[in-house]
Structure formats: structure tokens, C-alpha cells
Amino acid sequence: MHASTPVVRSLTAALTALTATAALSACGNSEPETAAPAPSGADVAGVRVQPDQDLHDALPEAIKKSGTVRVATDVPYAPFEMFVKEGQSELTGLDYDLGQALGAKLGVKFAFTPQKFDGIIPALQAGKYDVAISAITDTKERQQVVDFVDYSQSGSGLLVADGNPAGITTLDDLCGHPAGVQAATNQADLLKAHQSRCAELGRQPIDIQTFPKDSDAQLALRAGKVVADVLTKPAAGWTAKTAENGGAFDSVEDPAAQGGYKASPNGVAVSKKQPQLTEAIHKALRQLVADGTLTKICDKYGVASIAVKEATKNAGAQ
Image 1 (tube, one colour):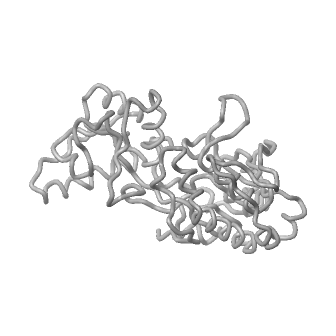
Image 2 (image 1 turned 180 degrees about the vertical axis):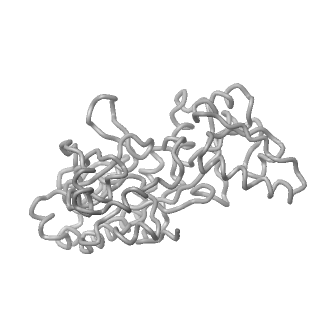
Image 3 (image 1 turned 180 degrees about the horizontal axis):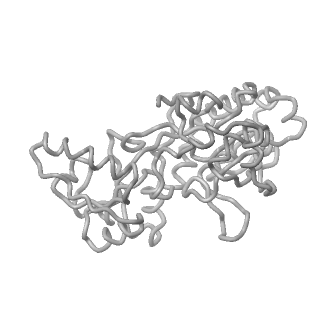
């Protein structure tokens, strides 16, 4: 997840423009990217996912007939959705892999199509897509127009230099130290709000160093000018895993905030017109949680801790 984007992705425009005209105008003309698994199963994140005939039989007739679930996703948004190569259409990422696993379990293809984020829910409403898998935060507001099957719980995280030389294990450890953060993000607000906690602990306030881009904060961390970079938890895990092949940074794992600070659920969004599909996806996800497949998918992208321990529906509380 790009650190410049707040944890809760904004769909305000989408929720206030749900007319058919707005929905159709928000949709792109791109063709589906269809590197989806065959009904016989698929290998995802090192796991062989086998189809469940009962779940396949429980799908809506139209989807069984077409053999395809049409998926909207906003690309790129690392590590959830990314292009394998810039300028090409082949997709990868946590959400894409999850879609392939769900498709394999249900015995159908999950065909992903890039769609501008603020047009996703209107496009679902218009029937252009069946579901959306795009790191969408499950909130009460969004539940008014779609149903969610929640697969991850993520918030803000801490990125530190390789080996964690400053010994940062929690937000409290930032008190009295310089910490980097991108300006105008949820993470910047998180640090400001934590200053009162530093005072309660009798410590000096956090020396908050704001930067135009998170990449600038990472440069400051590399140079030792800050002891940590505060960004989204998925972005912290992905950056720690990929920067210099894992040799530049570490992602802090606070046992008290496994999914990150101020964590919220992300879910597969399904049109309320398709409760049968929602239920089938929910049951498929429950199997992927129970057999550890979901955790392995998340771990592939350096964020095993954001995987839900129990598949829920509409768990968002905002």
C-alpha cells in the first residue's frame, strides 16, 4: 500500500453519485485481465487450492453459467494490487492472489479489471462488476450500498532501519525521538494524537518530521535522521520485504496491534443485489482462513499479521 494514501481509502464521491448516469460514466472501457485459475484448482502463494463442489453449486446461476466473477480493482496500490511489469496488464498483489484463491475454491474464474477507485461502488451498483477487491475499508457508510466479506485488518505501522538499532517496539518508544511521516496522512494525525500519551508517560514529545512523500521519510530513516518511518502497516511490511531484497528495513510487530495502529477491516465488496454470491464468498473465505491459505497469501507480501483469524461480514464500525 502506498504510504501516501491514508488507511481508509476515500469513497465519498462514489457514495454521493449513485445515479445510473454517474455509475456508467465512472466506468472505464478496459477489458478484463483474465489470468484466472481453471475450475480444477490453482496454486496460490505455494498452496494448492482445490474447488469445493458444494460452494460452486451455491453460486448464483448466472455466475455458474458464465464461469466468471467480474472483479473491479484499482491498480496500483502496493502490496494489494500491482502490475507485474509497468506498462503491461498482467496483475499481481495480495488482493489479486486472494481472488485467484477464492475463484479456485468456488470453481470459477475471478477476472480482474482495473477501475478508478472512486468509480468502483457505482460500477457495482450498475451491474458492471460482481465484486470489488481493492483494499476497500469496511465502514458502516459503505455497508448501506454494498456487503463486505472481511479478509484483513490493517492500520498504521512502523518501519525501522535494518536490525532496529534504536530498539523501537511500540509507538511509545517514539517519545523523545525524531520520527518520519508523510504530511497530511492518517499516520501524521496518529503521531500528533500520541503526544498526549508521551506526556502521560513523563517523556519528551515525539519530534515529528514531516515529508512530502513517504520515500523522503525512508531516505531520512536510511540516513539515521529519524528512528522510524510511520506509514500504513501493509506498506511497512512490503517495503521491509522488498527494499534491497529485505536488507534495508524492518517492520515492527507490536503484539498489542498486530494489524497495525487504528486498524480497520478491509473486505471483498459485493452488491447487495447478490446475497447468494456474498454467502458463497464468505464460506470460501472461511475455508481459506481455516487451512492457513489466507495467512500464506498475506505473508507472501510481508504482512501476515493483517490476515483475519475469522472471516466476518460487515464488521466495519465507522
